[in-house]
Amino acid sequence: MKKHIAFFLALILLLSPMTSFAINIPGYEGGIQNESIYKEVIFVTGEPIVLEGTLEIKTKEKNDTITEQYTYKLSNIAKDAKLSRTIKLSEKLDTKGNQTTSKKTLDGYKETLTIGKKKYEVKDENYQWNQGMVVHNTPLVGYHAGDWSARKTYIVDKGKESITVQTVGNLVGYDSPWSATETQTLDYTINYENKIDKKRNWEGTASLEASYNMTKDYEYVDNVPNQISFKGGFLLTEKQDNVLKYSYDLPRFKEETMLNGRNTGKDSFSIDTNPIITRLNIPAVRDVLGLPNEKDMLLLASMEALPLGSTYLGPSSSMSRGDFARAIVNSMNIPVEKEEENTKKKKKNQEEKLPTYIDVGKNHRNYDYIETVTKRGIMEGVGRGKFEPDKYLTRAEATTILIRMLGFQNLAPIKNYSTGYKDNGSIPAWAKDHVYVAKMLGIIEKDPYFYPNRDITKAEASELIVNFINYLQKNLKYDYRENILNN
Image 1 (cartoon, rainbow, N blue to C red):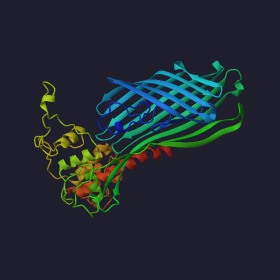
Image 2 (image 1 turned 30 degrees about the vertical axis):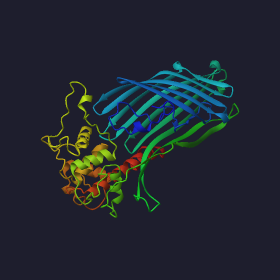
Image 3 (image 1 turned 135 degrees about the vertical axis):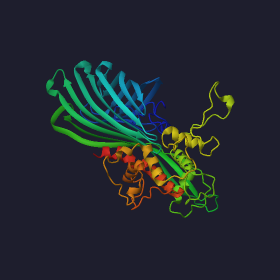
Image 4 (image 1 turned 90 degrees about the vertical axis):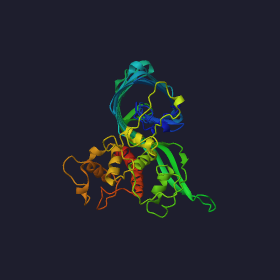
């Protein structure tokens, strides 16, 4: 992890089962940041003050315990405000199957805030904080949620004044290969106490929502020159956008005199990162040009989900189980664990890894991909130790695989129901929940017929996978951000 940047693009895209929680929003103070600037808002003076500066994060992991240190250096020149804060946290992990729970506690805290000539201080004994989280890993996506509570007391003017901020917070998020989102919600109750003049005491409330999102977008770009060896190609653009919204109900002041009425309002600000652009390879395929699914197949071929160097793909031909495994692994950027070929580099006494299936040898063109999807729980064998890699895949099977990757099959109704297709009765029982959810999410078309037992063509499989990518890019993100921020 970078010292000055809490966001780490590469880690978000790792698809191996998580051993820790992806803290995408930096810390638990409701702030957001990009490559160089961190910003947050405070309410302790009785008005919202936006601070900005730097945040340095250091993380160590040993066994099942993670320690973190956050160092903030912030200011607001217009308000003559400066803040210095150091937080030390420790996190204990407990993994059972595909779920991990964690308990995070405060090891050390120090904060100094100066506004003009006034100094606000918080030390270890004046800050109580704890948090619990859970993460659930599906074959492709990791979902996490957490809650925390805190009570922070600022000591002002050598104890003549104090400000106590009670915080209740929660977060929810997910990590996928095409997008990642986390949204925090914090509710503050602020109590100011003047030990000398009780008439100056006041109380206020504030709410804050901070949301982080990373999205990978693809775009086909035509080349302007005619005299060039390729017509155009795809580029991937990876970008993060971060939004902070807040509202408040605080007392009204004129200088240090409290007035009648309340100071209420709301505001927001955002910070984006500079996009990271990657140009994809140019596929050699020629027999998809002019077809309705041309761009889908070209995109998958550019990612080597379909053969990059093949001139003819046969878009109307059926897709095999092994080729679909390849398409899923490469389009979802799933790391392929390849066995070390050079035996001299192998560890002593290390046994040679045997193939999972008796009909998929190491020389099979899709061996590595089939081993990968099997290990992930994305695809399964057909029984008796076989995978049947060259057997054609049905539309029901392909749809089931995608929804299994999301872990959403339980979103289907429990009792008897219809998918809405006229051939609903032909959908196998094991696929019905998956088909229902895929239709509900817009991953498959809402045509009159689904044709569940028909072999899926390469063109249809390409469209299905690209629809799945679009769902990860847009719809899933919307549910975790706009649905929360706009409530």
